[in-house]
Image 1: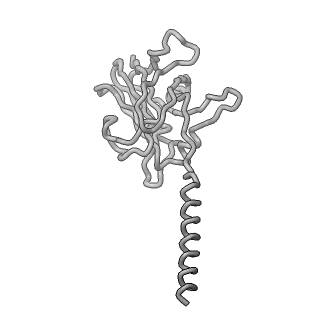
Image 2 (image 1 turned 120 degrees about the horizontal axis):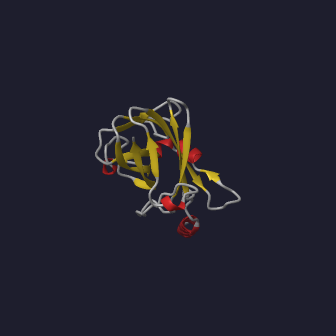
Length: 201
């Protein structure tokens, strides 16, 4: 009787050990790393519906590290590090930002769809150098997350007096807050950072 119990206990231990080893040998499934090579901003003057497109190149990175990002206005190598967006004073504009992965030229990927799909994990924020000449807000066509927070993929910008304003645009990954006035208010990691100058005349 005791031998039978001992045999069963030993057999059970072997089975449990085998299952435990099998589980530990199986690699955990990880989400595919998001890769962003470009950010595109289409600026539309709401008075006459004219528009200009600005394409920025961004460096690849992972969510655990900061990386410098170099903006580039497509087709204008002289302004590779100094993109200027011209705006008129006392006017309104729509800024529509999208993100791309063009690492494989034969298979470009629109990363905006993934940002929208994971709306709760992303947020776009434009940080201005101190200025009262420029403001922005979410507008028609923007996407909301499950808590009703706008992603700011589509925003309306309002200008007042003339000024030259440094702008840093961020795409945050898993921000700790979606409300703030500076980059540090949002926490999280930075998927994309681009910089440009808004020239209001």
